[in-house]
Image (cartoon, rainbow, N blue to C red; front, side):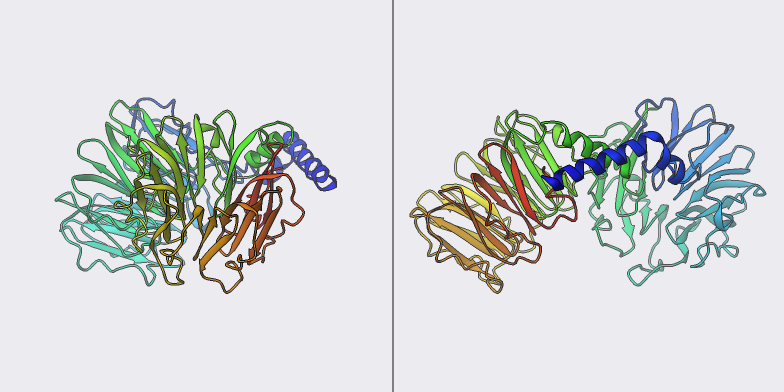
Length: 581
């Protein structure tokens, strides 16, 4: 009780400080709304920066939305006029005037905005902390941070297009080849084999558009943003920090890469004429002059404090019907069919209240899946491996989300799976007579109506060795182990057991089981919870729990639902996934 009181007291104090303006005046406004472009009209060009978005209007004026960071003023463009091109950088904005001169606002350190003497400029590009300008004679000028030589462009000639990235600069020559300077890193390619390029885009990686509508990219591939060789009919491309966006000739948009904030969820966009990828958001200009934007839109303490305050004094965290512990988050399904979420999946993208009419939920690593009462499935979050591509699923009666893939059980006893499939864990098309499913890290398990079990995927630790199991009534797939509940209330387990996660042979009177990454938990028929396995984060400290009716083991935390429809949690709380008070 004392801990809860102190949490409430702390949150109230912070909220009062924020409302008083003390933090706002001392530290700057710690949020951004780069996606607040819904009311923009008569736009002819857009540019997405690190935490802000800029739009050029057809009358030559400029609008901007986004983060005011320590007074840097990258959105202070309301007085600009006669602008013909714009570019949004890290914490600065650049505008090209029709007389060939350039204006810039925002961060001024390292001479970043020193462009007042530039003349005869025909194109501009703002990098993370430098600015590049293309002159009408095909030469290039640059100012700003130059630790990695990203401004060393004085000897460039015959350039027709430029793009400034994080710590480097790329130039397109009139012969269709590409030149580059700055920090390229071991993972980036040179550009010697690039040819027939008609457009370039540079950020943490570089993408080139070829005249046949296909793309080439450097080999930095941490989020698979360079896996774009299959794209066709592309007319424009934009490289974000961890994602790539392509505009097709039919006005639709495709995207791949880092998608924690939904910046790649552009599959429904139509009539687009320009795209721009920012740090964690994506912007599209429609042919009617309006603008679409998706991705991260709020940052910092303001939203967090308000949300904590609301949680403390509302009943939003009660009336819980079921729970799901993911990797870095926890989901609660309420009686009214809405969903609440705690943990890393946040920042306005995965707002649980957007999911309605839900009857079951499952939390993956960076995505969540909800089963609707009509048998359809909704999924939001990271979609790098297409684990959220469930929009056409029908007649589903159960779901299970793992790190990078999603499973669905159909009412006819067959199973669907989408997402990461390196270990063939999604190869479930031939399964029949299935009554329950569970998605482990890299293996998938199915319970058949005769009480036997099937499994596919990674079997390095023997986690798929379930063919001899019988009389099973429930299953759960963990990191590298699989657990089965028998109809007599005992439990069996196979797979990785070095940390005791398979030490379940003595368990009795069990009514529910759940396998985490390296631990296993079980609910007894008296409402008590028992646990075994890794306890580095306290995820097995459940001995004092009582009156429990449901359990869920996450990556390194454990969640349980009580008979009074409230929830309890223990374990890793780095991302506030246990803050379900």
